[in-house]
Amino acid sequence: MLFIARDKEKLHRNLPLLPVGVEPPGVQTLKRIHIRYARDEETLRKLVTCIPLLEFTPTLVIIDGLSSFFRQFGCALSYFCFAFEVSGPKTTPWR
Image (cartoon, rainbow, N blue to C red):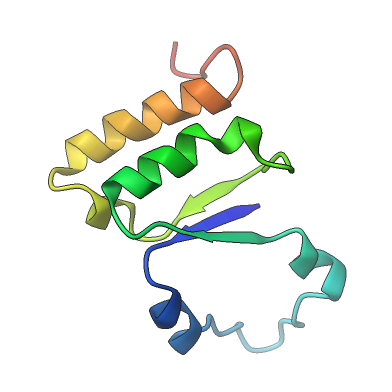
């Protein structure tokens, strides 16, 4: 899993809380989570387009606050679809 966040300090201040009764993840689970930080739209674009070059292949990419990177949400959505085509399967499910 690749988790992309905008603000490292904010992420560390607001760690996620687990629901009552849920066991915390084990060490092996946490080792599979990779965190990268993107400070602006340009950095996010570079990071997403370089996903195929990473030393690991993420099965899931989560971008925290995707719409905050773009002035218009439509722009964010169209870019995300393009990024999926670049780094994802050869055929997309919506074609």
